[in-house]
Length: 326
Ligand SMILES: [Zn+2]
Image (cartoon, rainbow, N blue to C red; front, top):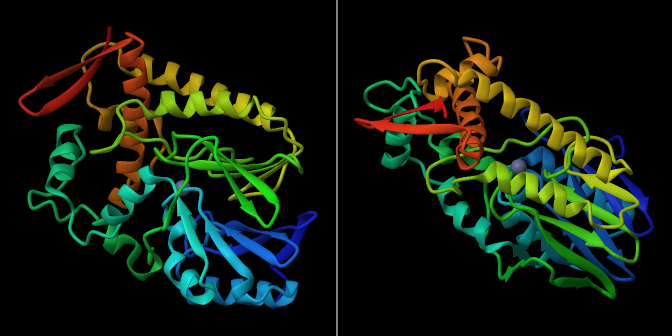
């Protein structure tokens, strides 16, 4: 097998694990201090991904039992989906932010939640009468998502030690409400999960049971990370890079542009989030409903930020929600 691991900073290794969907690779990271190792994020629970991880551990001479901590950025399948298998393999203790733990069970549900169906309908997503068009999260990922409940909570500003190497937890809500990045002050290395990707922007959406203004949270988190002194950024997808402030500013600009587009799309008659999403995002007509839902959630995140800023108003009539420029 071609090597899927390389040392990117002394004692910090990047591993490329395969994903069965786009993006097609997730980067996870091994961090060592002498005999003690930690794994940051897990990849998805597929045979291919687990075999790749084992081959990487072999190559670098890390016995699985030397991994004492499994520290995850957020609950999504490519970051936390193999946590059960990796825990069994290594015996490591698992760390995750408590807001993420709350989402783990929901992700495994095999039926769509009734409140979700009502939510999608209220925003104009065309679902069949029975709600059958809605993919249940548990069915969408199937066995690719096999999480375990963590024994430790990650909180903003606290430190976790890998041997004597300090990892500082930087809470960066937005992509998910409990997303955390990990800063290594001695090395000025910053593991950023999905928060700060070099080529794409992570999904930020409003969904039932989630925060009401996640895009504001996300933009605040982009400001927050710029306060750190960073020399190397290690993202979950795409190549490593150096200038975290430049990229954070680019991402803020991207959303400012999109906010203006969505504010413009809300002028004239009141429109629902699905209609606005269809205008603003190029989702091909024959795409699975999941893609339209993602575009609708993302549009809602922008509409809610505009609403909190007093630029659009939300109108609710007979279980139908529309937005209009204020
Ligand atoms: Zn994610």
